[in-house]
Amino acid sequence: MTTLLPRPVSFARGEGEFRGDPRPEVRLVAGEPEGYRLEITPERVLVEASDEAGAFWAEQTIRQLRGPDAFRAAPLRPGPAVLPACTVVDRPRFAWRGCMIDVARHFLPKHDLLRYVDLLAAHKLNVLHLHLTDDQGWRFEVKRYPALTEVGSWRPESRLGDRRGGLVNARPHGGFYTQDDLREVVAYAAQRHVTVVPEIDVPGHSQAAVAAYPALGLHGGGVWTDWGVNPRVLDVGPETLEFYRNVFDELVDVFPSTVIGLGGDEVPDQGPEHGAFVRALAAHLTGRGRRPYGWDEIAESGPLPHDVIIASWRGEEQGVAAVREGHDVVMCPEQHVYLDYRQSDLPSEPIPVGTVLGVEDVYRYSPVPPEITGDEPGRVLGAQANLWTEHVDSPRRLDYAAFPRLSAFAEVVWGTAGDPAFLDRLTTHHLPRLDALGVEYRPLAGPRPWQSLPGVPGFPR
Ligand code: ACM
Image 1 (cartoon, helix red, strand yellow):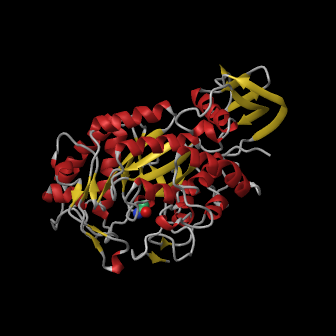
Image 2 (spheres, rainbow, N blue to C red):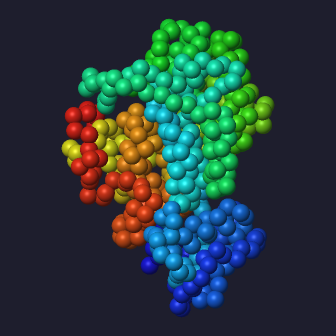
């Protein structure tokens, strides 16, 4: 039985073990994107990879074969690495193996963002979608419009738990990334074959921008201190369009990713002018050589160019419809991969919101809905797990929400889920790796006492 996670396409144990320097001899050979073949014998460690990414994923496999201590920041004992003799043949099923982190509702300091890049890479995930702006905060420095961060990056207080509970956390919250911070994150991620896909959300979820530049909106107001769907959306006239064209120009200057997110979700009283605004920005991005990427609502607000990628979040049927319309789609249905949702129905779950989504529920998810036959004009590029952070106010809380569900998700998008021994592999082999990394995951039996948040109201569905 392989101990690896994600499970490789094939694994065969050999005779004996290798002792020595675990850095492989790497040969680039023709093959499928990101694919590799790893051969470990008592004499050598050899990787044949189709590309640099494949060689990098092979190195992650080698690290796992060395045992949990290979995930510590420094070796515990002197001596050679020990690797079991084996042959691994491997390649991902999906090109988009993503995780979205909402750094807008609660800011994730740069150091912790870099740590998440490492955690994604260790799981062979290759897309980090950064939700950089929302009603509650603007996290991207824009040189032309400094008030976006001076005003829009902080709020004086926050709702504590679900809004229906009526509690408030009176501590101010804030933070933003400079353009150079984000260039650093992009470069660090690129070294690990992770693409950072930025998103600026329009025309809803934009109150932080309106707080900074009131002419962008119809109703004024400060950075929002509540959670939920905000009816105060952008005033989508020509000046606002010009403003956002300039903002997106700075965004594409920082992020080399071909794919650039423009949001488009949850616009109450959506009218044709909102669809036209999104389409105008999409055309602007296309003109800059990029591919616009939006939440599935944008496919319903008028005809969209086919190069636009759709994130199917409200369910799977939106993704099916978009693929039939000729769009490429990233599946992220809330019912299966929203990692802010509660992990069990235990009363001790911290701020329980959404439906129950346990680690085994995530593991059962299959990114290609059965209605999609492969003959549609569009494609399912892959899937991403979404980490919304209304109720996740610290890196420790993020670890709790993300792990081990994100480990299960990694195997889903690598395309090798369906292993009856998954939970055993997770418990016996992978949780010790997370322990060595210092990840404060949710134990399978339930939260540790200090991971609960008694008295902070959720809203379970
Ligand atoms: C979303 O969850 N509003 C994309």
